[in-house]
Image 1 (spheres, helix red, strand yellow):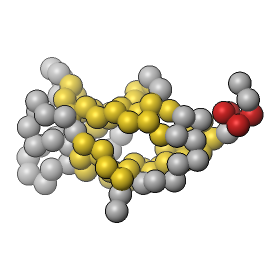
Image 2 (cartoon, one colour):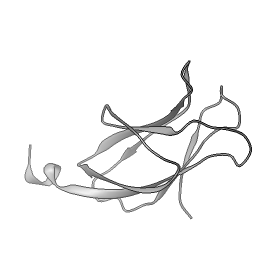
Image 3 (cartoon, helix red, strand yellow):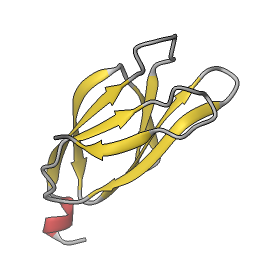
Length: 96
């Protein structure tokens, strides 16, 4: 590995749930390592390019899954929005 690929950087991810109804807490998976988290805005420290997946889990199945790649040096703030229904995927957009 080169020194450049080992350099760490941060990205901002906002996790939004629909305003109506109960939704379980989201799970963020960064390069295969799952990290349960809370709704709201968080900064994540990563090394190099990483594959990120966000999903919800309700003790029986996971739903609302959305995947994206965060590249080294990217400074875009991202927003994950949970789906209204438990069989739909979540969405990830660049924050405005």
